[in-house]
Image (tube, rainbow, N blue to C red):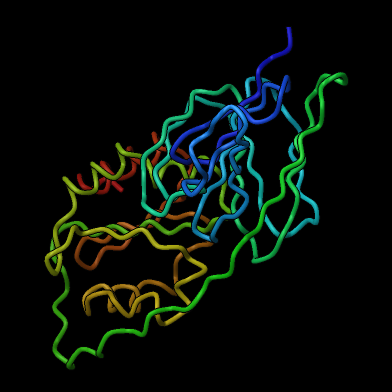
Amino acid sequence: MRAALTLFAVCLSAIVVGDESGIILPVSPDSPQPQAITTPQPVSEITPQQWYVIESAERLRVLASPAGVVDIEETEGPIKLRGQFAGRQSVETRSYAGKWLYIVTASQAGQCELILIPQAIDRQVIRQALTISGAGPRPPPGPAPQPTPVEPPSGLQVMLLIDQSDAVSALAAVNSVPVLSWLDANTTPTDGRPGWRRWDRSSLSDPDTLATESPTWRKLWSDVGSGIPAGPQLVAISGPKVTTRPITTQKQLLQDLQAAKEGRL
């Protein structure tokens, strides 16, 4: 019996597309409600901030042509992710129970074709066109704050530094509900907000990224940002003490966070 293959990119619903193929594609929220003679439109465009998730009961070989437009990471389920997914504009938490997951993220604006190759030679190769939209216009930064003395924050402050090219396990860790709940409950609020930030490292060179942050967090980054190792990193700040640890998995990240809170890191 042929194993069923499910292709997901988070959307309002998933509807069977085609006849006897058994392939399920994500449907754009703008598609009309499916009827007997209506073919819904699969999601075929993502922004640089969105994830396009392919879920499969069997292991696949997933390629993109041309190369360089997207990055593809393979991981095993089940897994829980929090972020912005294809076809949706809001941040959501999604659980995937499939045996094999392929997470597609944007590397640059452009167009490519995803090619899904099953292991069984009698299975049909699946091709899906995908467009990566540009970053689009950015809103102007708010007015520059008046120069005032910046008091160093007290308690525990945390930075989670990632890049979309990092390993899926690290991206999943910094977006997982247990980690986000721990940060909200255990870091010291600063300037009226929780005492932690999750930043994309590649965007921190752009002054607009920190333009909306408080003077306290802008100074923190100015003080410690230049000495942080490459790769996904946890930065724990307790007064004058700054400690970094590589982010690998959710379990390891939670252990390091607890150790930082207890002064053992």
